[in-house]
Amino acid sequence: MPKSLFDKIWEAHVVKTVGDLSVFYIDRHLIHEVTSPQAFDEIEARGLPLFRQQQIVATADHNVPTLNQHLPIQEPLSRSQVDKLTENCAKYGVELYGLGHERQGIVHVIGPELGLTQPGMTIVCGDSHTSTHGAFGAIAFGIGTSQVAQVMASQCLLIDRPKRMRISVDGDLRPGVGAKDLILYVISQLGTGGGTGYFVEYAGSAVRSLSMEGRMTVCNMSIEMGARGGMIAPDQTTFDYLQGRPYAPQGERWEQAVAYWQTLYSEDGAEFEAEHHFDAANITPMITYGTNPGMGIPLGGTIPLNVVPSEAAGFSKSLEYMGLAPGESLLGKPIDYVFIGSCTNSRIEDLRTVAAYVQGKHKAPHVEAIIVPGSKQVEKQAKEEGLDKILAAAGFELREPGCSACLAMNEDKIPAGAYCVSTSNRNFEGRQGPGARTLLASPLVAAIAAVEGKISAVPAYAELELAGG
Ligand SMILES: CC(C)[C@H](C(=O)O)[C@@H](O)C(=O)O
Ligand code: SF4
Image (cartoon, rainbow, N blue to C red; front, top):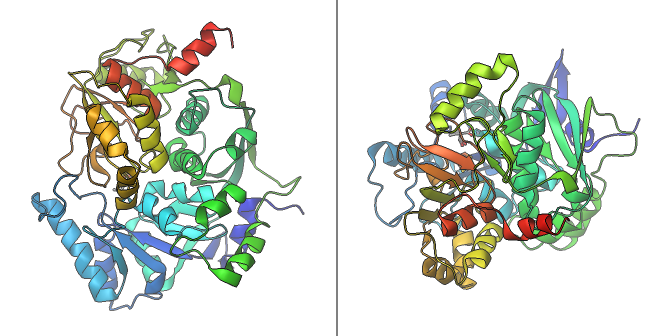
């Protein structure tokens, strides 16, 4: 029977089945300061050793400040979380890319960057956006804290097998439309529960044409439609990205690895419990207007006038929180903040996109524009390429790496009532600070909004529309 990409990796990692559940082997376990302390406590309380601590890699990202990282963390809770991680890693011999390390960064940015994330692997982390790593053709998913302890103790998880879904996007993405628009579009079509119970494979020519950064953006947001994870079959783009990275196989082992990775694709006739097809030509620059990532519309569109009765109450509450009305267009809406960052869009390509647009321009005076690179390496590369100067000249503040205002667990908060165009992945109430109003969009849409001081059309796309393209 023809196998899917998911089937191949799944079957290679099932140690044994117990009724409907499988003992599933984990190749890489990534940890951070938020969800690891309780797991370490449990290991400690039970007097267990870490089964394979060399397969665990840690970073400090959620609680780190993005200014003056060389100084002790001021905020007591954040400091204790990060200190605890450092202590636990030292005690248990876990490799840590902590604050001050030249390769520190958001866990989902540094995994791929270090070459820890590889095709065919199983990767978990106590973090929902672990789905990001699926961009390399891995089965990667977020787990709860008790499961973090389970993997620490056994390098395995007891889980049920998810159903398979394939989402194909074919055709060429239009100018000004990127990976973020693609995934916001898909989620707006399928809804935040559209992927529940499934593991998604993204396929089709539009997906194939994306860079690794773009593929990570897409897989990152799989969780926002309820999916367990997302994945993309590895190809030459994947191999080129990985070659020479610190943890990537070298020499003869590289050749062997590539030969194996080339077998990782869904065969013709492979079975999927659900399939969806989209045409890339229908995807426009996107923006969200509500308080879940499924509430997205084309940038030039209008907020729906009404929704199905079962969702009416939530819809009204959401619009009230956002200070927006049904039928309203977002174009021309003044904004207060622009946040470029998060594991969705804080990689070098994202910073390049922003810099290319803002070069020779300046942000609007009333807008605060913050760029938080995903990792020290992204920050370094941005400086090497001179992007820091372009961004500074345009009035953008380039900070130090971390999760930052994506979820405001550090000092970086958007004030109550303020509108923030954000390249992150969640627009929940209070996500960026109590009362903050988040509008999710691509780095390009965010950069344009910063310069214009209001939500504005993407020029390349608008011209195309005017030309009848
Ligand atoms: C703090 C962590 C557990 C959480 C997650 O699981 O996703 C965070 O990263 C987020 O994005 O909300
Ligand atoms: S950047 Fe945001 S979404 Fe990503 S791991 Fe950090 S808090 Fe979660």
